[in-house]
Image 1: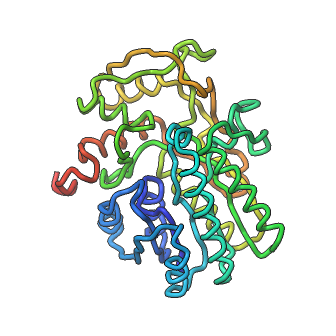
Image 2: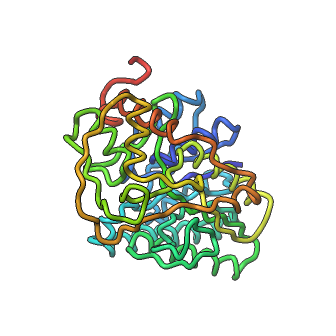
Amino acid sequence: MAVLVTGGAGYIGSHTCVELLNSGYEIIILDNFSNSKPESLQRISQITGKDFSFYELDLLDAMGLRSLFANHSIEAVIHFAGLKAVGESVHMPLYYYQTNIMGTLNLCTVMKEFGVHKLVFSSSATVYGVPERVPISEDCKLNATNPYGRTKLILEELFRDLYNSDDRWSIALLRYFNPIGAHESGLIGEDPNGFPNNLMPIITQVAMGTMKELLVFGSDYATVDGTGVRDYIHVIDLANGHLKALEKVMFSVGIEAYNLGTGTGYSVLELIAAFERETGVKIPYRMSDRRPGDIAICYADPSKAKYELDWRATRRIEDMCRDSWKWQKKNPEGYQSGVSPSLL
């Protein structure tokens, strides 16, 4: 019996596939490469020394999805596939609703047809919107403030309706905070298309000299140094959270949401300082105005995941900075660098 990983060639998906293979799972990866690169699949095999089945497939292709399920005995699904850029979602809401919601509807429909009822879903802390309190616990009010976050929130509600209609379903909703870092080998990491949307890839590209400086949006928040505070979590810790959630859904029924974060917030300037200490590379930055929709402080209460999944984040902010920098140095142009990092 296999685990289907949708979006398994992407940033978080590829790291999770490595941990799944290293833990003895048989996996099938599905990806359409809209947010990922084919080279990541070769790197997954290189790290683990293991093979897996792969389908270049879009979840909007229901017939292709049925064919995949017909060809394999699938026991559970870890669902990463979807569009994920907040800013882009504001400008292209129909694209986000069609891709994220319709693709997931197709997936759930086919899962039901083939009697597969175990699902780990890639959700997001954006479902909380402006948090009513910090640290944020799973019982906080849900109020997404952008189309990307609303697609995650709508899908969470869809999964609850699905379970209420058929109690054979077992679903874990994993609400990520701010994943950074990379595999310690430097073989896989975050490789954004075009201009990065996330902070760490900008920092590492500034460190490489690819970008001149980092713009820090907002210097007058009510925080330790005026810059925004976020809960940064190492992508390997995040990947291991998926394995713990998978173990739970394999042997239970129901639907539960879990925050995956460290429980500690770092400001933008604190993250820059940690990167400089760990790497010895100076990061030039310039303060700029706040971005519309940004909030001052956002960090998790991860205690539910600790008690119910036996999971907690163990890697420090220094580990996240070191591994991010190792990935960037070995792959200056991402997966398109053209040289196998194993040779560097």
